[in-house]
Image (cartoon, rainbow, N blue to C red; front, side, top):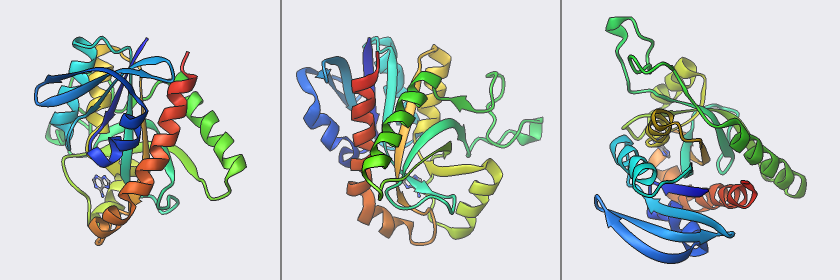
Length: 235
Ligand code: ADE
């Protein structure tokens, strides 16, 4: 077993990188891969950069060149459903790319033609491990909240009340961000199990960038806690 751990930004990766006992680092495609162990599991940790292309390239390298058998993604997201709050953890049930639009040829908004699925589903076993960990934390910490549902991805920082509401309604999504849909697509095409964990940094509304700056660190930590425990519990 080898687990690829992807974060988009250094702030999201900081705590995870400190936990990795690094054996070596390898640079490829302008990315730095930390190869080592975490909780005695073989891992490859990497900051993929922002956006779908960066995330897809990084995921494919983890699979093809480092032979990762699981892919985990940790970080923050905009909470577009009114039931989610700052710092809440989102376990993605499935991913849709909200910026894919081939409706003129009869496809649904978000649907990628000829790929065989509308949404990319996280692996059931990983989801169950993630939920169990969240339930245990909930018992000990009344301020901790988590949700399971859809995350939508696009090459766009969402910072508009209307847009945020529309995304939620159109896709029945809990949160939005800029990488996980393409990580999910890459894993799906390679038949590799994956799980996406994000914690809410902002609302995707008019002042999202201020909220994002305020919550980036704390929310990254919440996502990190879940990812770390998932790695511990994967067998
Ligand atoms: N990641 C965190 N917040 C986001 C937002 N509002 N839009 C896109 N990606 C995000």
